[in-house]
Length: 114
Length: 118
Image (cartoon, rainbow over all chains, first blue to last red):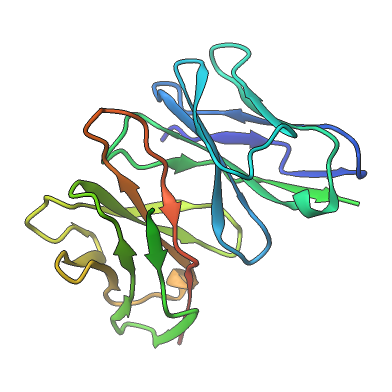
């Protein structure tokens, strides 16, 4: 069964550095998302992406964050000037459509900012 | 604004018994969808079941069923014949279906941690 793949599974970075989290969504899916989950807490929406542009973003998704679909398969989340509080699990998800189409999640990237 | 409430931070159940995980939601929209996800200790998010607001029948998927009470705005997940592998965090989520055909995000509740005891 096709799945969403995320790399790396774990990323350690120093405060102030930039990180890029990578995702390959399911190939026939059209909608892409990033969520994050601080350890043991709620799954929080960051951004959704459709037709090569951001369709919605949360208040968390400020100028520190950006997303890109550089080619036909990859979907990336860039975090500039990382802070300690950016430490979390970051999930990429994709869906075929809207409405009743479920989001299919990758296994996540655990980001640790030291 | 959407809001999902899961009032049970933790639940436990004996193996082979049924368990109900509660979820209530708040929306002013008539059209919406409700989803349940499972998150095992390994961390991945696994889609379990979906219920649309206009669906007249409660959704079922194998051992999972959704007790949907629209007037009460509740969408409780029922797991029958619990197995040890059901021990995980369970999240209820909602997505509003926009008449404009626009995009809508999935909003998650805080989750319920289920422990299945042998």
